[in-house]
Length: 565
Image (cartoon, rainbow, N blue to C red; front, side, top):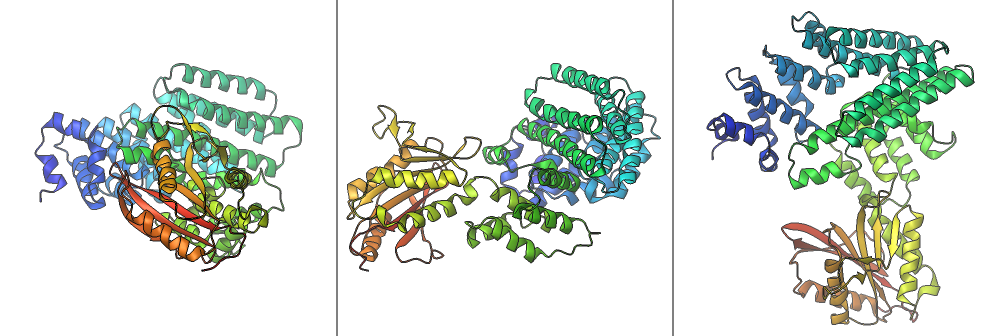
């Protein structure tokens, strides 16, 4: 079989350009990490290749690192170990790319930047000064030592100023120079021009946004400005304390990191991503800059600590996580301790869910993995919905009021209330999509949404006293009918008022397994973890337009006459 590298080599220049743009991410999904690295390394380092093709290849290399399809070491090998290009645009892109990888090779990246300062190309000099300024800004905002922080910020301001002097139209360097200058003045309690400086920064931000067609960044710049304003307030309203100021610096760097993160997402959105990569990009937890930048992640933790009560379990966990990240910390924290704290923080999360998250982030370093697990668990998401639905069913089952011939709607209201108390946005009997006949909008029992109003899952529930086949299939078909988005996980809740629950469960499972669905059944899995006799669960995997989707069937014994197996 022809290799990806050989396949690319047969193309002419226009075909190569096209290959590295719209169709590239379709190729990515079918290629191994080794094939992709080999191809992109060959293109970027081939001095006989068209420069624009090389530039596109380097951009795609960084895109794949942001998307976690390639590892940072693949880019470091190209950008540090094997680089020999003298082409201006390629070297400019090299400087920008190395900034994202700074945490992995700090000394080497600084050495390369300093080498560019003696370049005859003013663009490279300006770019190198600007990114040295970013590195020192990062150091100044993340340091725990006041003197180190101030010295790094002073150096950063000088480097941003030199970047703006090296070449015209570096409005980003002028902006950063003024931001760092204001921060230093707050640091030194020089308050006479703080408000004037803040106004200047505001005007520059407005100018940048006015000439931009990307309005997504607006809220991020507003957040950045608000933190600057809060730093000014610290200086003006009370004596400067390092604790207050350091928290402000962490928040400032967190906002800066959010801006960079959005820039990366926008860049990736313009890369003609395939559907699966686009879905990954939409995820609230996919934050490429934070994933590559340890200081940004620490600033995010520090900023969150400032929002929490001192004696909360979440504060303890995050403080201990920071202690694990800080290699020089005197407080020795074990990974096992933090895992135990996670379980205490999120008692409704099952061991399988925790194991699934650990596996999801298995390629990350331990500190990043724990923080990502914490982030996933700290807000409503698909990750936890299974645990919360089962927990709600168990709570209802423990209340005898819901047994026997109880109203299906009232049972649904209980489930919806439990999910709302867990932080989900829940719509009960929402009018959504079309009915089974396609004539008008119909009702689903429960729609679960995350905090951003994105749908997570649909629940369809039914009261059963026997395996009523037509009634069961009508409700299952409603899931497919109303789920216009093709959600990955939906639920059927069966409130069973039967004498022989074990027999009922087996008959129900056998019937559903044998039924010919609109979307074919490709697998059936019984839940072997759920250790209860009066509540059972199995999952049917359906093939919906060449994608696997799950319908989880949860059967709850609510018989008021006692259960016979």
